[in-house]
Length: 321
Image (tube, rainbow, N blue to C red):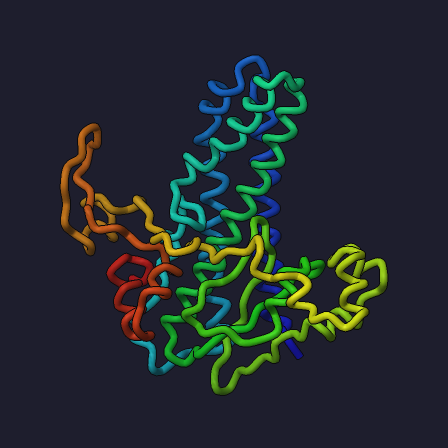
């Protein structure tokens, strides 16, 4: 059976955290002064940041206890190689500061209003974008935490994708095989999927896309794949080829060949800054900051030569204590 009930429960708990953060952010969005969208949102931004950061921290903190419960201890794992959940808070999956990302909803609303749309329509558009940003930021933090915690355990060799109920066609066709523990997790905005580790003694069977498809009703197939795609599959076309799974998907922290890094925690006061060093004072900044880019976790895994190299880099960039 795949995934195990524990993996499903872990993914569902993260989904609930993301939904709760989104509801709280939406309540704050409704306090925006419609006569002064920009300034009023600036005044509320700290409250929104607190909500999203809290959701991210809770999602990241769940990784180590879940793996401990699922796999038990790993005798080959150094005691100090443990995830620092706080290292994944305050940025989105690409490493961009949340404060900047959370301005996107008000910019979207203002753009629509300046084009002549009613303020109510602009507010609705901004709320939709806020929901997407918040849910994705919380889910990405949780998935990144799972990934870092897994790679720090020598016993984990790979992972399988955990589909959350109602997964889209793009996610479904990605769930049919094992992925290297150092592989970036493919997701789209507001993706609900997760991952489950594979070890010598814990081997969940990946979901087979064709089996899931065969168990769907006609209405479910049409909703998930689209009627034209269903006709093509019925005619014998390969599901993965029809869906073109990689279109619209990206790793949580790596897009194309761009190196994804974050400026969070790179001052002398931050753990990452103290480890990366190479400080320099920048005009307008209060503290000296490291000039060495602080890579995001999946970028590190993409660049690392092997697991030991990945662990060293994760420790250097302060994702592992």
